Length: 397
Image (tube, rainbow, N blue to C red):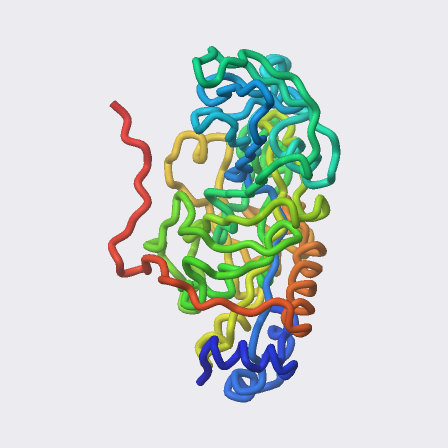
């Protein structure tokens, strides 16, 4: 019916009809698919939740007396950076923590500050202490450096996240007799609570389940600025079984994302401390879905009541990779605040913010309507369900 080029022309002319994923769900309750597909040009999505596989490449520029920090050690506010790059390039991951953090020696650990918090501080313009040490070479004689910087002092601050935007995910419960501390939050014993982490009907990859419009080069909202899909994400698994509406029954596709952190905002990149687990980064992502045909409208119109997530025990099955799934539950039930499972009424909690996800989808909608954000045609699309591409677990010897 339409092409991305045609939709971009409508955006430039100020004629594009843009709605959020929430809004298209409501439209689909009364209007026929054919009519919506004809009238709507773009559907915006959003998500805002902890995404541990995130981080930032930093380039400091050279000191007057040059130092080769590559191969040495670098700390930013006490958080170690990876230095196996060039002389003054480093990478800081969201889960990096200071060497002197007590970790879980006093269980459960608090993990007060780590890579995610550092990234938030940099984006917020705060001053950060940099301490570097090196072994010295003829061309890089300096062996030590201590200074203070802000993000404006850096040549580059490139947010590069190897695995974001999981397509569906587990609902975590605890069948054991003790409280456990996980990346899915604190789980009370004997099915005391159930935690999930998804925006459901607003979540980008649940609105385009076969990634027919998303690929290498797709332009997106990332951390409050503009970013791009750089590749498929680590642990990408398109072969997961699906329901009739195309939604995978568990974690499936993921995205690797990249963007200029200097244009991002701390409201959409937040450091997180997960008790007993570690640190992370809460990332705001919004992806526009061009309405190219009626099939896309069918996908973006899927409701929370039609999207199901697997329920997994994090006391035994998850840590031991049994693959056992206790059951499934819709996001409609999860968002109600409780689910009925195994004969119990179990309170639910979300690690992701639906309110912020709606905000992100709304901001992206306004960017597109104003003409300041055009869609991109992916350079290529990612392996699909029938491609033979499969995620492989670690081989143990």
